[in-house]
Amino acid sequence: MHRQYVNPSTLVLFFFLAVALALARLRSGALTLPIVMHMEATTVALLINELTRSSSAG
Image 1 (cartoon, rainbow, N blue to C red):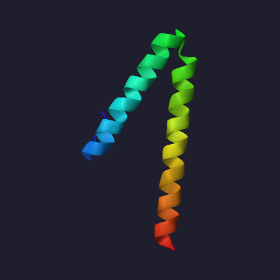
Image 2: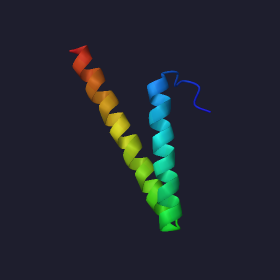
Image 3: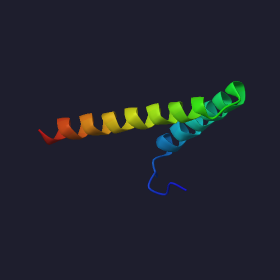
């Protein structure tokens, strides 16, 4: 369980991401699509984190 996420909006976002990943798995019949989707979501989250951190630092 991700206990570091306490903001309710983050949990709602994760819920919808999980639903999208589950639907991708069911429709594609393979794990490749949901794995790629997860990688993309992680990349976007890291980029947003870096951009917001560097803009607030300077």
